[in-house]
Length: 220
Length: 294
Image (cartoon, rainbow over all chains, first blue to last red; front, side):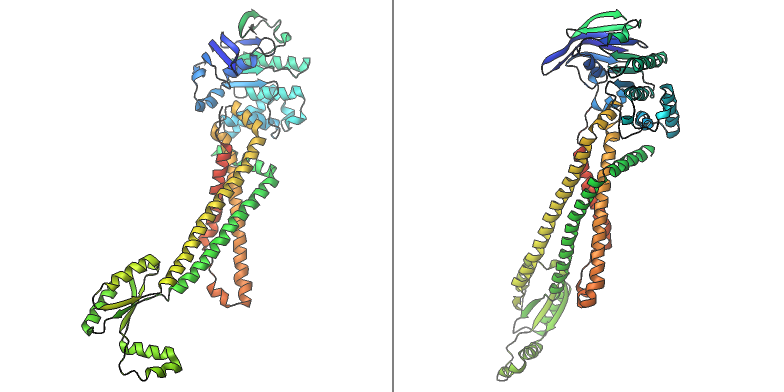
């Protein structure tokens, strides 16, 4: 599903990833780990085409990502749900509007949009806060809204960049449970984290980035 | 259609959220357009005065002393068939003398000792209004001078040249001012939309990550710019209309003569002003949003 072949990415001529080769299969939950600054976020950015590789090939499903034209990027991104550590919710929109926005971009009709948004908010247990604005929510609640926004479009891939970085243990468990549920519905999940606790004992594949490439692969 | 509803809903929410800066921009645009309208009104009134003056403009064609009646008739027919000439008036030698006597009034006694009428017969011709420019009239006069049995051609060369200079100056002034206002209004909207765009930079980034197309991101900003321009134009139109109503109703009460000479903007201009404002603002907004890159 996701394939990197000899990918190199540098910032100001300083390579952060060098000749990185890896793949993620359809339906997997894969963890990308490594120390801070190892290039975990860059790897995710390369997947959703926010960064372009200097060398190498990247493909996601049938999309040749490294050759993707500007006008094709938004259509490509509609297949991907993204969860960030800093949430990236719009403060001037309600919880409902934030989640529905993803569906508006997909041009879903109003009735289906309402139903899908209410259903996904129910799944993440945020229905009661549908009319609230993000600044009035706790970190855990905000992250559940972000997960709802990422999963409402039923993407083929969900990328999470340090999704529990700002959360306490209980909220971390809730979010990870949600990721497992999303994965059970057929979505491939890739989680970048430096938190060992997230993958230890998970029984999922873990890719460790060290010295600018995938140093080793293990089971969590 | 639904997506357009979203664009408008999103734009108007943002307009309301930033109502004070929007109000200030609308006022600035309306002042700019108002200056343009004031100048247009001034030009219209000047043009009306110039047209009034030029109505009296004519070329006098003096005929040879020895011209026969048939030759006079031929020349008159030639003038009447000329598409550039709208009026031909024949003045005989006798009529010319009467006119001079009328002009001299009591001093006409000085003509009593003259035994033979020294004045030539002539034609006074009027050209079409749109041909009354100095170079054309000069060429026409030269052409007439070359005709057989014509001794002299006279017209107010200096006067016509001055009239043309005033008219050309007004036209150039209008073009320069129009361009300056165009730049100003475009820049005002550009600045406002640029501020909005920077304020909503995070929102734009999130939209990009969710897979929004360039038009999905851009259109609400363009709608905001369009609204600002249209409102500025409407405000300007309303001000001009009110000022005009005040001028015709109240000033004319004290100076009735002004009513007939007051040139007004055509009604289509009251629609053209908001349309112009919208167009200028749309250009400004488009430049402000700039190229969207993923």
